[in-house]
Image 1 (cartoon, rainbow, N blue to C red):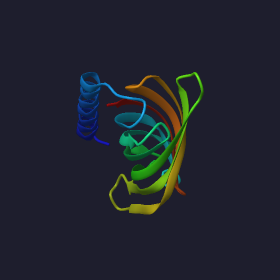
Image 2: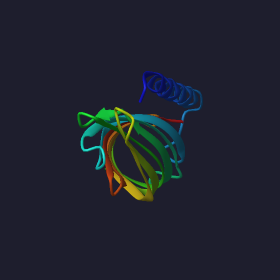
Image 3: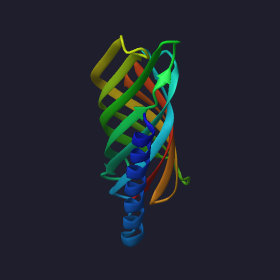
Image 4: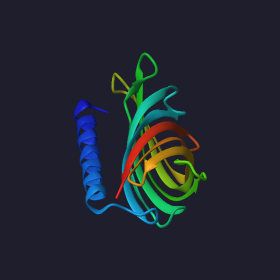
Length: 177
């Protein structure tokens, strides 16, 4: 990702989080249904790139109750040199159904998600004479362990299976409203 793209992604995520935080403060929330927005950062491992790259993501969702919900996300990685002449990057869009298990008497929860994702990996030569794009749409999912100290804020560490060619470990934070 170029610096301008990173800046726009960070600015967009900040605006979403600020909006969510404002709504959470203004309206409060119950433990039942809640919308949420968040950001994540992690390492994506795409087979075509041959090295793990740093990836950034934004996500949002809606919990229908304490357990069931839906979530959508976008993940994009930095361009990574993995050979003397090759560089690559990965991006993914996904939509999921989620299930959350809240551990009794603790702010810790486990989350599973299953859905569909479109994952694109681009590999280019630095000299410009070679380009390869892998575009995969299919079943995707993930698991996460989260900590939610109150109804409006949480952090998660997770593993995402984006496609047979791309997986991601991440750490994220979200605001609910």
